[in-house]
Picture (tube, rainbow, N blue to C red):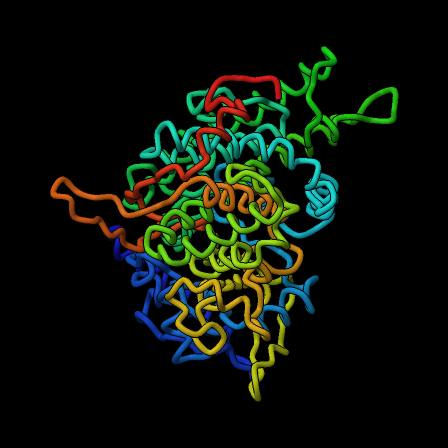
Length: 520
């Protein structure tokens, strides 16, 4: 029996068991039938953007759908009312998390991204709340402002490397916030290690990338068997993830023993009122949370700021309006045009604030988010006049892209229109959806939004972004292409970044270097 025949037989058995399980007086939500054996798995595996497939299907099947993937069914929600009903009103039932087969194989299921709902997750979230709530987030403003000033300097010196500069800014903020470690440059070994970690987790979590997620039995087959390339990926990734967690944690402990540790998330949690210090178990919890926090504090910022560069390249009129507002604000407050925009200015810059808000709607940082139901069937999923059933241990996905591109809520959703948020009765704020729902909402929301505002408003204040030109002098119009990942980023594109009037005077006065360690 060849490998394909074996897989087909196993899938057929799984499908039959699934069919038996689905027999109930309360039906599943409707959805596409797909292939007889594999459902929609093969179609989605070829997709460049799952969320677009789901959005298209929802037009036919409604706000909650059943998507069969071989022997497993997914349930996709693209209506905010249904999402709130499930993940907030029934939070205890829908706060579990689907743990990918790769995460289990690599023993990464203790990470807060994957950890199942229970006492450990509640403890982790309590610790995170201490470090990332909206009040404590204000304590991080000085270091965020400092790193944004360095970002501006780098954009002036090497504007063509703007994507790399955005990564470095967000990564520097995250590493210093979590570990109290000052980053020297993009070549800093800790930054490079952190970026590798982010790349690995992106690979693990990208839907459809690994056959083991569709056929879990593959984990038990030898490495020469077709579809088992994940074994090599796991083997090469383990030491990278372990090294990052150990090296960063060891750095903080060493600095703490010397009395030179900069206040950080990790150093604060390692402090104890007890003369014996914290327990080894608690230390392990702190290490695991800290290593997870880098992504929560950095990757969402990177995605949003990259989208900002793309939006300003494509919508110069929007950029001009925001720049005019900032300049007028500076003039009215009798401050120089090169002044640094702070969080205190946000309420005084409504159009610029709407621009940042529209970025989260136009291309959400996370297009899909996955929860998992708890250990019992939910037989009361009410949608209009219909009642559906979601069985125990099901994967339930929220299509946030679809919610934020609903034309009945956001007219002309494909267009970048900040004005939609400035009308008398604006549509729901995108940040209500963009960072997730319920008890699995992104814990780094406040810090990420601070970094977004500081970066975007100050780039607008000090630079103008226009289309790049080719060798013949013709403008290069970038495409709106995004990566098919959990945190989606614009595909590489070119633009021209030019300093605005007053930049040189302000940059000379601030004296913030683009690279190298400094005293701030």
